[in-house]
Image 1 (cartoon, rainbow, N blue to C red):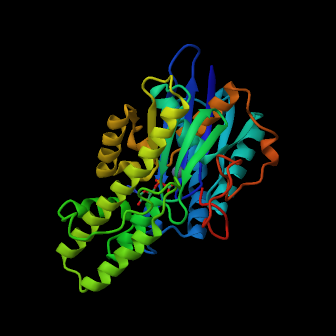
Image 2: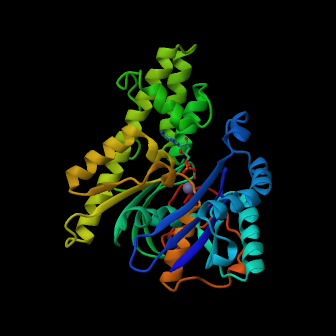
Image 3: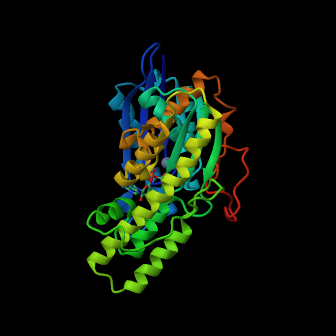
Length: 362
Ligand code: KG4
Ligand code: ZN
């Protein structure tokens, strides 16, 4: 049996969780406590790193206690502590990893420094007992990538964004239209009453031989449409949202379809391969429907973990810790690990052209 305490502080959720894996049994999430900071950041229209770090400092002790209490265990009953050590906002990462170092050393437990993206990548094994290999589409506020998941610690990036992340494009679109933060859910809600055909927004990269994503041009097209139609009526806003979402779904389906095809060619013996979706944007119904259709067409099974495990949480970090312990990949001395604001899952694939001064988004 392995029981791990997970800690997540890479963005604007303060989270802790206890997950257990019993011999011969499916894993079980004993607790999953997530404190969202949305209200702290809403007035600024986006996450403010210093406010996030301070909020993590104030909340984390209580969140860890709550996770242990909900799970009905104390620290002595935990086998290891796993904390997100990157990528993300460095202030938050420092708070989470330092707390984990303190807790682990006080309790005399091993520590694991976990890559947040690995947490997302392995979640479907926690929820659905999935086997390797499978394809992951990660679409969040900070990441947009398609990754081949071959094993624990064994990832190959097949596509990434050359500019904005998809969640970022939703958030910026919302901001341009005067919709509140976070933008994604509000754009989706507003799009419901809109006409998706009114604005012929570009489908970035559609049909391109380069497998990557791009959303900057779409964002510019939205800005131009919004200023041309100003002052915007409710109907204009709804139509822009609907047209934006249609463009995104279409572009995404094209990019994903390409990788499904590549997976088929790479693993011809796998009868029903799997595409897993993760990240906050996975909540979007229209995007899900379009990906489901794409999977049906290519004979893939489509797995979307429950929403609370698609968005940022600590259960996925605890689970990644369990996977690493089980695979004998606990890593080096995590007590000496310095948080990494940038930490690609696939350290081998070169950053894509256009990935910016600070390196690839993912
Ligand atoms: O995974 P997540 O909770 O946090 C990280 O970025 O790591 O993702 C948040 C992102 C935000 O950009 C938010 O606007 C977007 O996911 N999002 C959505 C929806 N719900 C959340 N985007 C589109 N449609 C939604 N329903
Ligand atoms: Zn995330």
